[in-house]
Length: 88
Image (cartoon, rainbow, N blue to C red; front, top):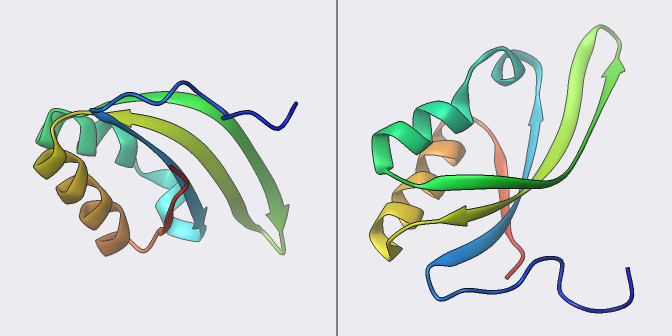
């Protein structure tokens, strides 16, 4: 959209793209991570598909919080089997 950034950058914010499939779609991972590491999330975009009975999707989130909390949040998503890409 227009070649600009997706969301305004802030010092305590990072933009993530999470890709998920199968069992991870049944868990409240964003909520769990938010509560555990005191990070907050704003959903920018998302999409899901049903492929051979499995949910496959992605979500772009603005994650806000202290640097260490953001790092631990990303690690927690990865440990749950999500592919995490830091966009900005």
